[in-house]
Image (cartoon, rainbow, N blue to C red; front, side, top):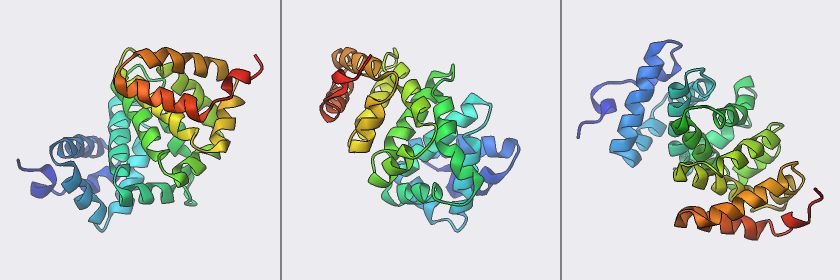
Length: 225
């Protein structure tokens, strides 16, 4: 199969502020579906890859659910690569004002009406929370309580991929003691526990992830109502 980036240089269009960026997103999503590892390598090895990543971060804040959802999907897929994850986490430490919008834009996406965007946002948050550096960054973000609230709401989603991604976020946050405390001190801590228990009866992936979250955060039942 011929990949878009092998026949047309479109990565640079990600930094455009018009419909060219949207078209580039669509082509990149298609290429990731067709040849994920090869496309990620080509993307990260490009001399302009840092600018392209910042372009994706900007597009996370788009009012267009498809655009924002595609940007989230691409960032999450790139973050599955060790170098890609390092590059994205490094961006959260940058001085650019855009670095402060990454989690809040993903969090806002969790409340979209578009189910695919919600699933992509939850998946990307879960992927970024897999590394210790990613968790440390998230735990310092002011919007984390809102993130936890939206993630908790998604545990009851009819879309099993979305609910599993949501449970995975909680499981990975609670790997650290600080993450457990964030959940325990959240005003929806009892709801989190109830939803995790309810999700034990869904699919095998969601059941496993919910079990892990409950294991890592064992004292949630003792929170005051």
